[in-house]
Length: 227
Length: 336
Image 1 (tube, each protein chain N blue to C red):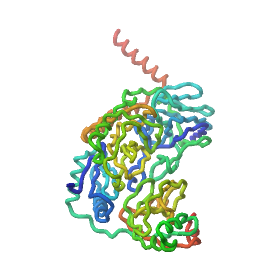
Image 2 (image 1 turned 90 degrees about the vertical axis):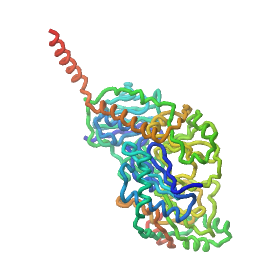
Image 3 (image 1 turned 180 degrees about the vertical axis):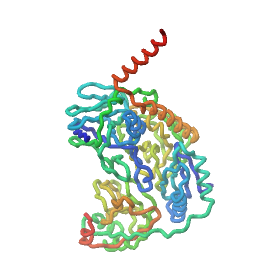
Image 4 (image 1 turned 60 degrees about the vertical axis):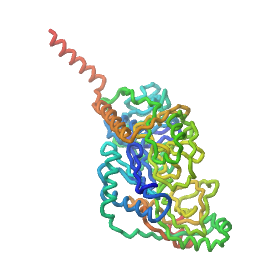
């Protein structure tokens, strides 16, 4: 039997804290809770925190502390008062599903036995949560894609997919930030960049935020700077 | 004075790098910075620069620049590369001065995979998230150098008192024993497989770039279905994909990943690992997390002691000769 949370020493400079296994809102809420406790009042020697689905990695400076020292601080923070409950920040992003911007829509519809409009309606009905970033700068992994349009990723990645594409695989959804290969299904494009270009807030989402999508026309997409 | 260098040749993966950016992994941004973290500090300190100033990381592809205007002192450290200034071979770790019309080349030499080239002045390059370090896949940060590019150095200086060969410490040569802390997902592997991992040896393949290094060696089968959700990834993580092949995550790694990490290379030994070349053999030695912290501290003190020596300005040759005469004069005066 496993006891949660579990603390694992990593290399010479990190502690992995896990709250469970799998992708579940309650496990992720504990990750976000500890993340807030640490980022609001960083313990001595903490360099940064990487939150993920079921755990977080606390990276430290080995000249200032060690695994046992940081683990003791993490345990005491977890025993202490819970972080003040703040409502997650909500984001609303426009998506254009027109033409080539949603190049895989027809295929997703065919594979799921739905009309293209039904696929779009399902995507728009989803309530998404930012679970983690990964793969590439600004790649925020949102979960919440409705079951009706969930598909496993393609067997082979497609190269050169531009930034700003809305892609789905399984329960996940990403708005791409760089020209990259992807094996996910490309269903639309958003003109709202995740890499904002704003030095004060360079990334649109924080882990734990929630996201909804609304449909925009091709004209609105172009007017908002979409390519 | 502004100094302009034209890149007359650049192999792949020659990039601007400072000490890298911390605190952005939560947004998918790794540290980047030099592959051999010591090389940047050494090449900067030898010139009298701040240890984390931006320089050029030269890959095995090599680099040649031509000075168009302005003179500038430079330093090279890291791997044992061939440094050639105006057709004259210099020591692999060196401080010298480049003047207009002269060419400087840094090419693979006797050993090592990465060298840092730094300048007495500020290298111009785009800042991204507070750092000029280049994230190689996106090109964000200072950027990748290509043939024809102009590399500009603001407030360029000639620092004659810094010129000369740098002593090559014994620890600079990459050892083949690479220390790891097992895990954090070693539970996905049978005991026999864990023993295979530390038994080795593993060879570096040519699937080697700033993101990661694929190894060839004993197969490392995963003992469970690969259904773990993506977990955070640290530089040095040894990730094993479904085919049982290990990849070590390096400076520009993805910050999360769904493959189990059998072990993680400790910080100081990553500098050794990256200076090996494709075809070289290494073996992994498991140490406790306490021993890993002790090793990181020992490596830091060793480097600091070396940098402290380098930081003293070495007088120009004439000044050193004069100092020598003065000292011998005093000594002989006492003898009589």
